[in-house]
Image (cartoon, rainbow, N blue to C red):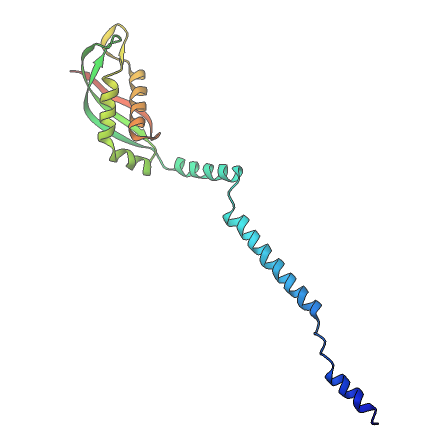
Length: 173
């Protein structure tokens, strides 16, 4: 029996074996994969740059939302504009009433706030461009004048806001 005591002492003094290091490594590996996968998924869902298809779909949604807003008309009453013939000679003045068709919502408010700029752009464009019918210096060419007015209003606003321009009345002065 004296021999049994040293074996028990040897077993008690022996270094303790680590308990299941393999299980701990597997748990940590799985935890890392879950966290890494979740981070990657959230990046691709929320932060990654959108592809062309996503950008086109988003642009189509915005366009559909803007198309749902009815257009508005902005009116300019009794504006006196110069009339030039095809040689650039001033043939007289004309009083015109205009309507600008713009998309409703923010575009309409944007254009209304800048009416003085639009009026200036119209005067400037008509004082440099002939909008009379060839051979009839006091007759307005409506198609050419409306296109010129739309282009000059959009140039004054800095972007395509005015959809079309209608000359409501034109009276020589």
